[in-house]
Amino acid sequence: MLLNLSLDHFVIVDHLELHFEEGFTALTGETGAGKSITLDALGLLLGDKADFSQVRSGQKEAKLSALFSLENLPQLRADLIEQGLMSEDEEELAIRRIISAEGKSRNFINGQTATVAQLKKIGESLIDIHGQNTHHSLNSESTQREILDAFSGCLKTTQSVKQAYQQWQEAKNALHTAQTQSEQLLVEQELLERHQKELSELNPQKDEWDNLSQQYDILANAADLLRAAENTHHMIDGEQGLQVLTARCMREMESLSNIEANFAENLQLLASVEAELGEISNNLRDVMARIDVDGQRLSDVDERMSQWVSLAKKHRVEENRLPEKWQEIQNRLQSLEAAADLDVLTEKVRQAEKVYRQEAQTLSKLRQQGAKQFSQEITQTMHSLSMEGAVFQVALNPCEASSYGLEKVQYQIAMNQGSDLRPLNKVASGGELARISLAIQVVASRYTSVPTLIFDEVDTGIGGRVAEVVGQCLAQLGKNYQILAVTHLAQVAASASHHWQVSKHEENGQTISEIQVLDKEARIAEIARMIGGKTITQTTINHAKEMLGYE
Image 1: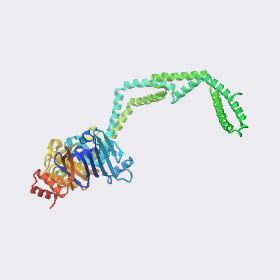
Image 2 (image 1 turned 90 degrees about the vertical axis):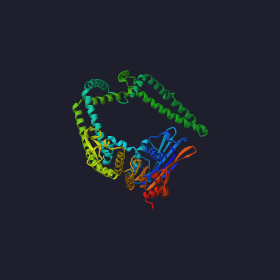
Image 3 (image 1 turned 180 degrees about the vertical axis):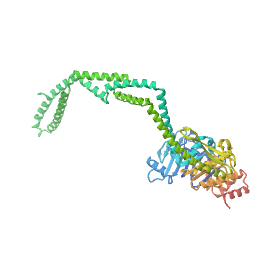
Image 4 (image 1 turned 120 degrees about the vertical axis):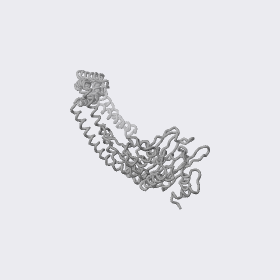
């Protein structure tokens, strides 16, 4: 549920702080006063694209924030806790967005930086906005299908059907490629087999090139390394070597170390030098034992390295990447061998089609069940909107298999009793289409889990008794949902539990829009204005009181 909305320097709003209530709230005002600004702000907070023109003239940035209660949205709350965007003891969600005059925006969820995609994903669970032009999209098959699928509770199944269809098409494409490009694939396979044979003979192993390089350096310089090791070992461990001289120095100072303090310190240093020389001597003995001036081994290593260099150059890779190249060739050969097996590919196509049709048939059954109930409820709601005798029906027309299933969804209507059902766009006028759209939105909203529903002038094109029924429908929805309706009809506004008025005025040469929560007297005046326009008489005031149920 939406608790609070705060706007600063947004379009023609200087500062606005709104506190929302449960139930049905009507938002009214003269044309151009800025009724849609509140909805635009909520849309931005829930992931709509930002625009620098939304920053109030003369300001560096616009700031928008909203606070929501997630008390009745346990799944969303659990998801946000898992993502680290909410703590275990929190039940309120704060969304903030800052839009600069340069067009850049910064987004925050409970104080943490967030992406527009995250705002959009969260927004789907918080608010459902029905725009004033929603009825125009009703003539689209995709819109009709999406509404029915949402009503029927089969959105997950539609995704499964789409995925199964894609896998089926991929299998068909693989089979088609194998059938039409078999000769090209055979040429590629023969070439790869030759490469595979060459590399198999070499059998390059991971890290082998580095080991070969190290071995080559040692073997190529073996004589010099051995000579240096022997000479150094002799100078350290020979009859007149450094170890012997170090021991002699220690003996000279040892007997006098109790007299001269520096002698004792020097003895400790020399003991360390003696230990280090001993370690060096041991290392040199290891080198002399390990190094072998082996011309044949050097020749063998040189020849293998030449083979590596030759094949690496042939395949245009660095020498140390030759094992990876070999693996790539092996993988590609396996793919080609599988692609060349038409029987296997044909079976994959058959299995993929089978899975698709099973999923699609499940979807068809869900749509059939949902279409029947949906049609009945829309028809009943249309009757309440002064369209007595009209019949609404969802037709499921079989079609070729597609990613959307095995049928096309078409909304059909008969405007008068006894008339034939015809496609919606062939029968309904603009005003009738608006009422049908409202009926669909009202029915669909009964089954939504989104706690806040916003209706933006969806009552366009209606009036009189029908407008009163629309207000009653919204008031009924307000018993279970938080409803905000932007309206220009007094009958709709009078049905609301709460009433806000949008107005604008000039201040320091700039237009400023404000929203005021109306008390009893102010509400009577606003309803009277909506009934009578500029000229408000006692008759219109009395009519307003009557509509509001005030004595």
